[in-house]
Image (tube, rainbow, N blue to C red):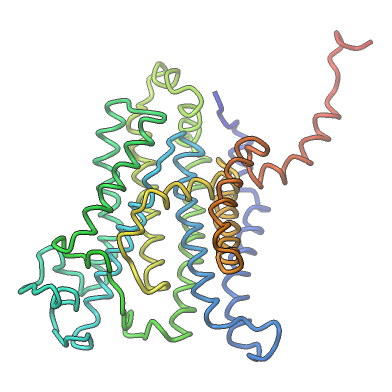
Length: 380
């Protein structure tokens, strides 16, 4: 079994970790506002306004990848439906933003969103009640993905569904949700989804200052998610998760509740994905059923694989680098992006299975092996 020793657990929170963590968070929080606000626009170092929400989107993707790494890298649960939790959190935030439009919509209806007026809805559906309050919407961002993951996980883990079968079921779940949300009579905007947001907390979502505030919120959310994930993986629960990843039957024979451990981490992972979706929507300005696409969930797994599965940091690095490459390549040569993405996944599987983080750590491991003492029985 793969179990961390006590000294390794204590080293997870060594002072050097806090220095690196606070340095990274501080750089993300301070550098972007400085380059965007204080550097003259005509300077080569200036950060244009349109790049701020793009960077914020990358950070939301990083939190989403982190949530998958928590269950895949440490518990061995390959979920190909994490895009569903991300989209549900996004829809909860989108419903709040739509309720804030009020009479400023195209049809001027103070109660119904524009798409409901267009589809001849007569009254606001019951599941929209309360979304005019941010606190209620924030609770739903956590509750809706969490409850879905709790129910789905209880049914799957209690039945001991594992491996590729679990991956296929999670993929079927997100595909079913995509088909449901495409329907106009569901009350979520159908194929067009929700867009044309006006403000959040009274601030215009299109203003550079608001976008900068949303970016900073994404930084802190990612930092919180990383600390929470690291706390769990360095705890006794984390050691149990890694053990059941490597030898689930042995953990079960030792008397641990495998179902409860998996259910907890799977639900928590879904909540983190929902928070990432909620921060994503006001920055990109739209949410639609395409976010439920199974291809999106597969792409999340590629981010984690490229960065380094089971490292937490690797998930963040992989999500940011792959999406930055996607942004550049889809503009320079859009027809080649899917081929590049597929090649990345093949390379991480065959050439560097530990991802980018594994490649960076390898040079430090080689000297340690070379300097290890030779057993006396093997000496010439």
